Image 1 (tube, helix red, strand yellow):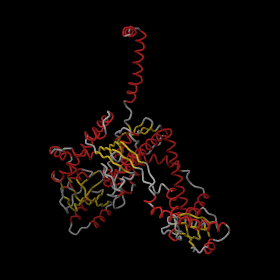
Image 2 (cartoon, rainbow, N blue to C red):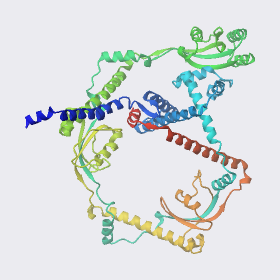
Image 3 (cartoon, rainbow, N blue to C red):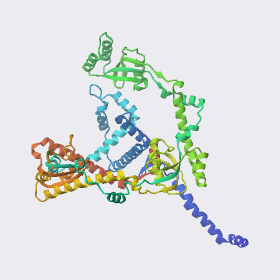
Image 4 (tube, rainbow, N blue to C red):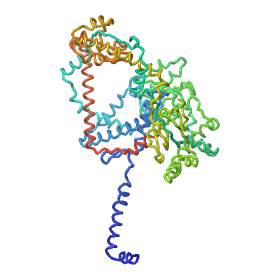
Amino acid sequence: MLTALRRLAATWVAKALFVLLVLSFAIWGVGDMVRNLNRDTAVAKVGDREVDMEEAQLSMRRELQRIQRQAGPQFEADPRVRRMVAEQAVEALVNDRVIRLEQERLRVAVPDGAVRDYVRAIPAFRGGDGNFSRPMMESFLRNSELGEQQFIGLVRADLARQQLANSVRAGATPPAMLTERLYRWVGEQRAAQLVALPLAQAAAPATPTDEALRRYHENNPDRFSTPEYREATVAVLTAAIIQREIQVSEAEIAQAYEQRRTQYETPEKRVLEQVLVQDEDKAKAIAAAWRAPGATFATITAQAEAAEGQALELGAIDRAGLPFPALAEAAFATPAGGVTAPVQTDFGWHVLRVASVEAPTSRALAAVHDELRQDLASEKAADLAFERANKVEDALAGGDSLAEVAQRFSLGLATVRTDSTGHAEDGKLVELPVVEAAREALLRAVFAAERNTPPRLAETQDVGFLAVQVSDIVPPALKPYETVRDDVLAAWTADARRRAQEERAAALLAAVKGGQKLTEAAAAAGLGAREVGGVVRQDQPLETIPPELRAPLFDLPLNDATMVETRDGFVVAQVTEITAPDPAADPAALARVAAETEQSIAQDLEAAYITALRGTAGVRINQRLLDQLAQP
């Protein structure tokens, strides 16, 4: 047999087949490697334009900082928030490229003068006199981590986008008929008669027989059954667990301190007041007046304005915060309370007064020693977690048990018998090897796993690396009647009260549908009715009607009635009056509705326009890199 195979291998047919085999591997295997060589380097692509990871990270960081400023120190970027912000940041960058492609196709241009006028008109860049202030713009750019040219580019792109958007929005004017109908719909008011039937006021039902209670117990097993219990072994691998075995040397702490020294040092700052004028002699006169005893910033401001200049309180600024070296040298060479000589820059002549000096601060290594140790340990643990996760996966794939793997690689391990809420059969909370915030995610994984399935390590957002093996599932079981008789009686009584009030409400509604007024039907049933008026579609500051009734009430024609279930019972209502506002009576309110409608239509048009552009631009999102972007 071997001899025959050797002879066959020596033939030209076998050699040709071998060449074809090699070529097929080259085409299918190496070809894939070559084609994939430059893939997956961009978070998104729009045609041949990429959104790289660094740009997406910067955009996401700015958005998180914006949310932080708005929400305050209590804001915490948990995994769900980070995911949402990451998706929004990438979508914004994709839309930006889609619009730029269209701008280039249409050759939309933005003159330099339009960019300059737009920047100078930004309210945040205005000084105390209401005019454009370059220092305020530069402060904004520093806080936003933007270079000046980068910012100008963003403004230019935004103005070009506005040209496209405004051309699309131009057709957003709503017709007068639509505006008037919306005005009447929004401003419509209704009056109604209401009869409330709270469950608490229902008559006590007759005492049920034991047979009725047993039947109720059997017919409602979901109310009187034990929950499903699962016996599972769970193992977790997190940076917090690994951190316990991480050793950080004093040399590493000292080195990290030197590398991060700027984080622990605050440079000297000076609280500055500035006057800027265009004439040197006027600047000298202002400097002399400012040095005179009794001079106030108010008087200097008036003198600066008379000299066609401006005065501005710059606040606390370090040396790097001043845009010109000459200004920084003058300001930091002047003592507190002193006034500098006039300094010339591209913007004119500056005179600075040093209102106060904030001394530099520095936190010594001893003060940040423990903080640095913790940070370094966390960084090492995060790196080690991924390395160890690969080894754990290999060990589990090799057939090792979860307990063996947990012991070998120092994982958090627990074998529990629990319901989906994390309680044992005795009602106590089971102990899980995760922090409190991750309990729910771990329990979801336990109740999603199949019984006796070999464990596999998976990375999760809330827990970290997690492996679960379910060894037993105890399905829900109806509790013996004798052990839950009191609960059955309470539930039966509550249902009886609810059923009684529902029947009374239904009888009232039937009487109104039969031609009676609600007040008459209520009086005949021994119930009281109340009238409410001025009910509008939007929620009112003080709730005049049950919230469950508001929408049904506005669906009814005049004199018709409805019945709704509320949080505490039932309500029957009959519409007694419908008042529609007259558009001519309040032109200002009608104009507001028209403006809101126009804005809404314009937004819809612009969104549809961008969606259409995206459909032809070849947008591709790299979900793997998007997931990576959302990670802390």
